[in-house]
Length: 633
Image 1 (spheres, rainbow, N blue to C red):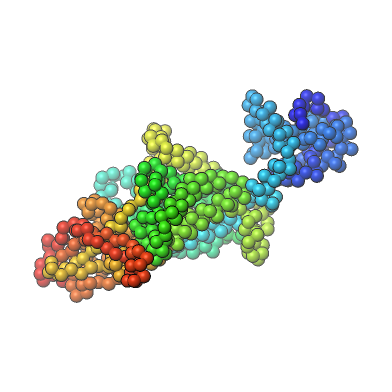
Image 2 (cartoon, rainbow, N blue to C red):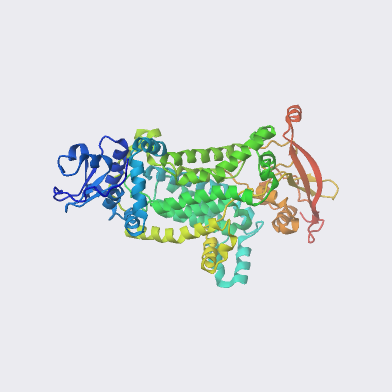
């Protein structure tokens, strides 16, 4: 059918009196769906009529012309049709007015848009099926009130797990007599950096870095997490949680510099602006969440997943290139578990296939985040399934649970209503209530968006063009953002480790007989059974995995740990299952390097062991305290 519209009527002698009228095909489900969407934008400012009933009201417009395209008739009698009739009614809307501006201002765009419109109009049944496949059968608008409620409570649980995990470890790690005391670290930073240290190391422990203060920060984090979970002042609680965890991450030094720590901080910062700023969170009565901040959270998930795939390719690691990486992964990951042993026994074709699947999920599925409802839902389920598999076969603290929480943001309220109990959903039935955020919140959201979005975009693009971050226009802003972990780079296991080297700490009273200090979670001997520890995060166990990959001279914290064992420090002894020197501390310490491997099917069934090992020699020379006499206890 021709799309030539030169002979179409441009005015009518029977214009509507007061309200413009949009005329559409009432028998076309595709047309009805789009009219419903337009009605949500324009409200009562436009009357919508099917041509089947409106044809008599405008007898001078040929029926064949009404059947071919949407018509927009204004009180002055002017007729718009096709794409123009679709865009012009929305020209005054803040969210869609830019479409009309582009249509009317960009040379040639109107002609292209009209041709596209008539192509779709002539094949409406086909495009109706496509639309249903992409958006689903529901014509409800996408809303995220229920999603926000679920996400923020999931985030509260992640925060709770993070603080509860850190609390028992914090004084032994960075307390007054810890492995890396926060007080000494901050004092040295101030001596070197002066007043700028307060900006570069933002932490409440500048005020007090005592053991009591560190316990107080963890306790406050637990209380704020519980308050957020039950809906008390969510905006305030999220701001407090972010400040508390940032303070502990700065004071925690290398023990709190894992990717999930900065991911929690970046997510928590965005959640402050995503949450309702009310004192008592009553579901369904607050304003809808900001679309801009939701976009930033979606983009954060995209960056996390896509960057994780890209770093594997860009590293040039042969294990990823030849698809054998997962064969090593189950065995060499920092803290493994019994299910990983079973996966390790799978044939190589399984490892190659699942490795290829990981690449597909990390490099392709993230783009579904920005697609229509049904495709986005499929993407969310795939990403959640990947995180579930990682939880099943590994121990990565709260990392995968936090990633799952971000995935929940992709599921809009239409799906939650289908699967949730009516009693729980009932408070959200007032979704269309005309509630708006306060002026201060709206301004804060806009400022946060226009600061963080460009930086996040630059950070992602710099994955392919690293010099971009060094440009003067971005350098200072990116460095300042990094102080607060506001925008971070991500990407786990860029290079796959192909052997599992473990540091075994041993003490001796005479330099001849050695007794091992067995950690609670990392493997120390072949008789140990790997187990689940997530969402708990044993920080020393993890750091020892990294230390085994390098030189002891670059891991001074480990020498500090051994010094405390030589002194019998009770705080660090909590990291171990038992104290092999209960009467008096050892006189000497040594660290052996041992290569652990999973047993095979037959050996595992025969011996009941998960591990076999081989010696690699000493990690560092034997240590002793120079100031300790034989009479010291």
